[in-house]
Image (cartoon, rainbow, N blue to C red; front, side, top):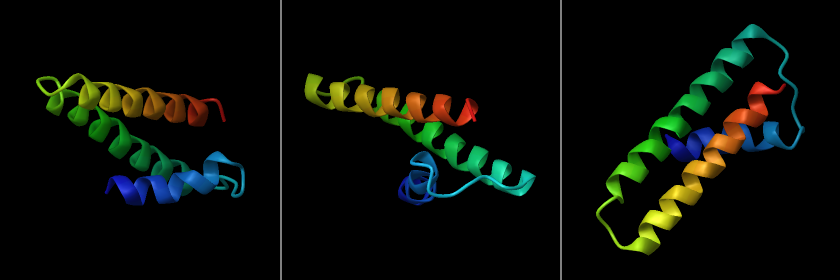
Amino acid sequence: MVFEAIAYLLPLSVGEVGVSSEWDRELIDGKLAVLRRSSAALVVHTAKRSPEFRYLARSFDETVHDIDESFKEE
């Protein structure tokens, strides 16, 4: 599900495709929700792992936050 969300959102994030309908907005919001849930789960999962895994999870979580914010600005 994460890869599907990224594959759908990536072209939108670089402005190759426009959001033209309410259905598009709902689909985008759903994909963003998948990313937010997945990144949060990864942060929790890596909490007791080595620092490298925690840093990687935190980096992914921050990237997802940035992606989410960029779509809110549109």
